[in-house]
Length: 200
Image 1 (cartoon, helix red, strand yellow):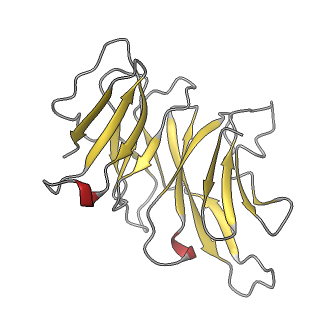
Image 2 (cartoon, one colour):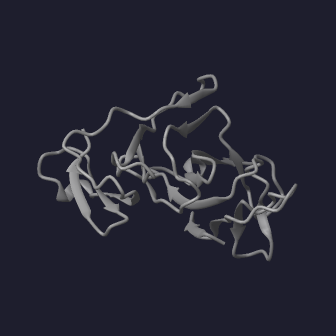
């Protein structure tokens, strides 16, 4: 298991960076503490392992659970939750791979690089193997949109890094601690340097 993410009062997700030939059953799995086995698995059917998880901020109920998964295939996918109507099971939630979009345009080269949504959930950031800084995408999509490939937003101004350092982790600064009202992010480089800057 490479990462764990708590989703609600009873459920959590796990991801694994171990991939067996012809078996990706537990790359991404959702577990319920009331049961002894995954309630959703085989969510991601590609040959790449998965190594980091991030929960999208939610504002209503379990119906809005959505989380991002960093894959070792230089892509980020999203998993979303649906409520099963007329279910007789004690678990009425079902998890699915979002097939209408995915986030690409960065390199992770099988490293467990961090990912994070900003506090409002409209931006998604990732570490990157390249030295040009973290990669940021818009995470706002029309639910009825056709399949699209998300590409990174423009490079962030003022970012300086060592040419031999990758961005290993990212974290958004909570809005109440930012005086200029802009989304701000912390990026950690592999050489130990921490950089704080405004994203937009």
